[in-house]
Length: 449
Image (cartoon, rainbow, N blue to C red; front, side):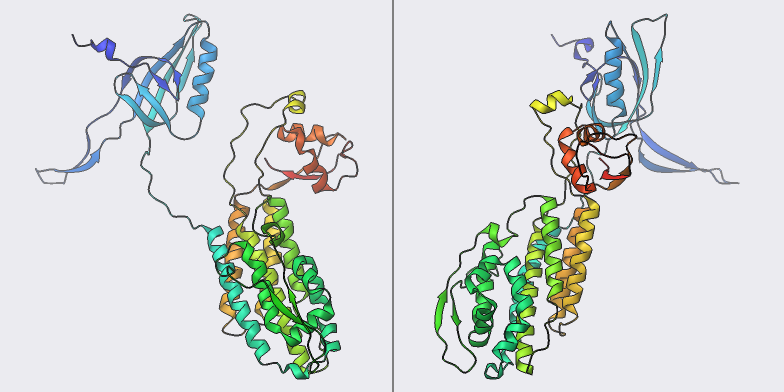
């Protein structure tokens, strides 16, 4: 025997919160617009599609725990977005909760009544396209480096190495070697000194480009793979017999400085350092002789491009932050001592924007020396880096100014502000507080979240 209609009814719920239903109503059919005209007997009926099924429900919760069940239903109704409604007569559907009426009555003690409205949900959203700016930035860094190598080789092909003054070249490359030692320590360790660098540039200029290509091969970019790591270094002045020695270096992703993503704060600091060093070697001092100055400038341009390529690769590793789920409840300080709150790092928008602007300025500086062939490449890299860092900043958290009412320890302020006592170091570091136990009652920069 088939189930009766009562047995076929489903238990009503919304977002897994159950309640009882007294009655429901839902408009059905099609929308029709009637057009009537003066002095005409016939009317025109225009069909406008199906009527939206807006469900109006009279519901109630009852029992000794009615207030607890009421609060759960209120939370479900006031949560933004779509939810699943189990309708006793119509089954399961995706809806958006609308305005509702809640009523209490002393006469009907132990019961709370609701008049609910549910609108149709948009289960089938329109497709959208979002650019993968991180991947595009990584691809840009490879093409950028390829063009930088071509520019270096073209510049050195015009230099008469026999006319280079080694002492003048050393003086012109002092700042370049400082940046080389700071940003590419495996290379500076293999080269040894600024004198050896000048000798390599004079005798075997191609060996320097091979060293850089070998270094970048560990970044995983296709253009860098397969580059020769071994190169030849010559000693002595131009025109003298060069003693050759094989230089071999081994780099790792961590030494490359851009192959792995550690944290937003470290990445921002690294990018800012890249921008500062790239700007510092934009031009070399004028040395004795045109060829000496041209050789020094060619190498300075190569090292500057290498720094900017490394910055571009670092930027490509910074992900656009996904929205993190909020904590349902704040654990007490004692609980956090035993089990600290684990939170995903969120980029600080102001820090990312500052790094973006400094790197943008360094790219502009470098592009002013580019010819018509090289300029589109470096400008494309600049635009892509700016585009990706803008997306990262947009996904981050803003800083706000907060003034404590009294002097408090940083751990107390962090717990009051974020519900996370472990973030005291963030407040201390950003505001340069002398002692974490005494945060002054002065304006502080803290994250908005």
